[in-house]
Image (cartoon, rainbow, N blue to C red; front, side, top):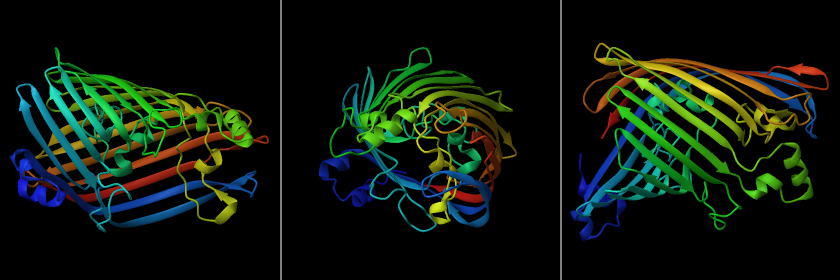
Length: 407
């Protein structure tokens, strides 16, 4: 619904000329109940970081949750046709937590998207903060159509737990989107600094992101393929002090990551299966989560493994199908990855993840629907130190139910 005056009031900065533009206030509110059972192994160390053993933490929690199906948000978007074949538009989108009213990210006025774009007969150019081509997020994402659950549904549809090379929303982005020829659209992206910095944008002092991708849509068949890389800052690669330089060398800090992601899906009408896959190499950090709750002697797995780079692959097989008046969702995922160097361990650190999810969504009206879903994720590790084998695991079971209203 177009609410020009409301949009002007929210911004508080539109002058009379803006009233002639096509401005829309929009959003989503998602609230429901969430139950989570977690079983997490943790690494025991002394103050010097030497490994002492493992401990285990179990936790049950439930309560009111915002965004279990899709992120609660509000936004403003608008376009103005300057001339035939020339349109200028903008989009400002802020996430928030509907259960307590807090913003989605501290210090960001429009954390989900803040872009200005120009459309011509030769394609579209967008500037600002937005999701990467392989992020599953935002206006220029081209991979989420290969996921049954999209990138919502909390850990039930957490594709980033399987496809570890997924990008995210980034600052200082430039995106080009070509016109569509014979069903094929080409996109290119660069972030001159993935997060806001006071200086060094576009230089080797900051992490920079590059991506090239293409989509193909031919009736019931759709697909996408993306190659992306992060050019890491020289601080990460080389360190600044003598100790940091030695640690960077031992941990195998590489100059650039390499990520190849693709999907294919076909809509048979009665069911729409989809397959997504990704290969990644030289990714920064191990991206393994754990709980830190017992002072200096307990390190979560992520802290213990530190900044070791990783490589591996992930695969997600999913499907959606009409069921009654609603839609059924199902997904299974698996990945296998390892550290790129041995570090202090007796060999490389290896991990694999399995994930299952099933959900159902039922429309109450054109703008409102209810949903429910359940999922399970298990991360398993395997490494040796001082001749002893360690096999930490993190298991998460989640059940959600709620309602979403679009405006």
